[in-house]
Image 1 (tube, protein in one colour):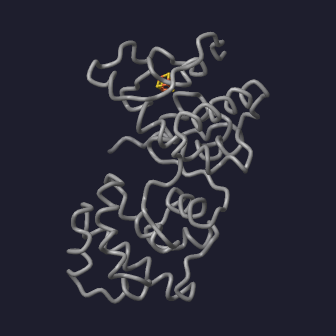
Image 2 (tube, rainbow, N blue to C red; image 1 turned 180 degrees about the vertical axis):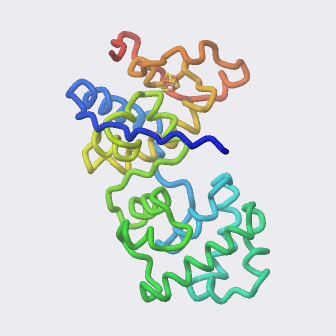
Length: 248
Ligand code: SF4
């Protein structure tokens, strides 16, 4: 008989104290300075385009998605265009994004959902967005924040890694709830994109701690002790201030 999977104990919500909030605020200020270009990296000019680009971006680099959508968006302008795309054509048009059969299926189902439930308009609330096929909280939060300016925290693998290493993941039952608890609503979108860029550029799976602009605010400032030589000359990330206290 197969072993029963262990039931995960839900993490308790811990009210963030003032020290945690203060450290989190400093982290965000520092990251916003280090990554002044924070914001969505997918190219779009409407909520529908961002929704499509975000669905395509699963398991793919944003640069590749932007190359594909540059052409795609001139051909597919409305949900009806995706819903009516003949079998094989949409697949061919998005082939370069990888997993194109599954993604084409998601785009068609999402487009049908928009036409049937929302008169062809992308909804501007979490409930509506997550009712669409292939749209989870992460995708919905990206669309809410970037296309509608609605405060939301989107947790991708970069945000998750950075939040965990900085121990900002324990103030709620999950990382999204934790960041929403720690940061004021007005900072949710900024925190999302600053964490994304920091996770892509510095706090990578093998982190670049020696040049990290927040390593005095991180519980693991020496996770990587030396910087690969090849990277030293290429990276232009501000160093941390010389004298600063370590977090508790
Ligand atoms: S010091 Fe290292 S582990 Fe901590 S946030 Fe910076 S890069 Fe990540």
